[in-house]
Length: 85
Image (cartoon, rainbow, N blue to C red; front, side, top):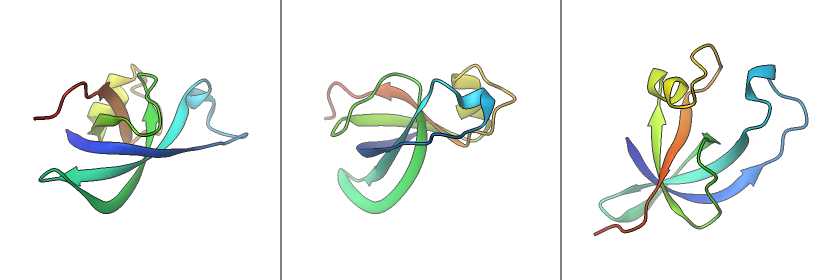
């Protein structure tokens, strides 16, 4: 799992048919409570908004989280952080 902050979204008018209906979000990873400057594009599986802290699953776990085992997904937003202590 990766902790990250949603920075924006990407609009794609043409995409793989297995990804139709999903939003693509730009996220910046967080390490030791600080933004790292490293960004990822993640498929949003939970309806996250800009500015929210989220949990990212990568690799085959991302495809499983979206219930799309045969989709071309490497990173997926799987949770929204309510409180980070």
